[in-house]
Image 1 (cartoon, rainbow, N blue to C red):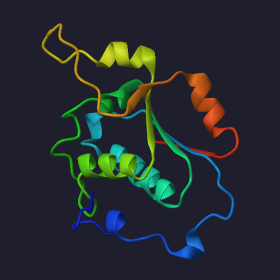
Image 2: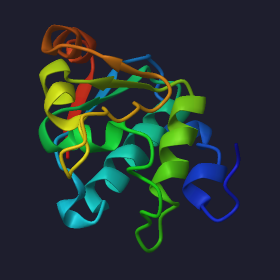
Image 3: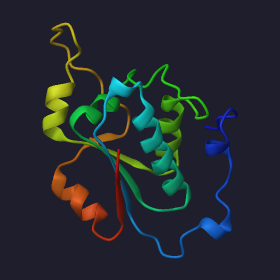
Image 4: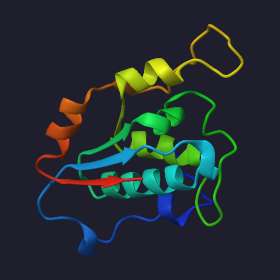
Length: 146
């Protein structure tokens, strides 16, 4: 998928910014929709950039950040100067990025507001992952938290 409205998504990473050694990048997103999606947009922009630089990249959704792991939650979220959040997430996954979701957070966040007993559908490709896998992924690389 190519998003024509975003230089972040459509501009290739110049060779001078490519990392010589492949190192893992872990982006931990613990912020939900309270800020209108600003931190989620920044997190997925950073993650997409790392994946575009051919770094194995994982976005780990925990706490309130688990909000973004379900279908429809990123729809309509767009920060000025950035692509739409749903497009960023899709581009990140297409670039080879992985999205992990904290299992206890999934249990707490998968039910929609209003008391419906029907759990929300996770985004395609979102996997339940515990903290040990996140720590192992970030052990030989870097981690950012939003």
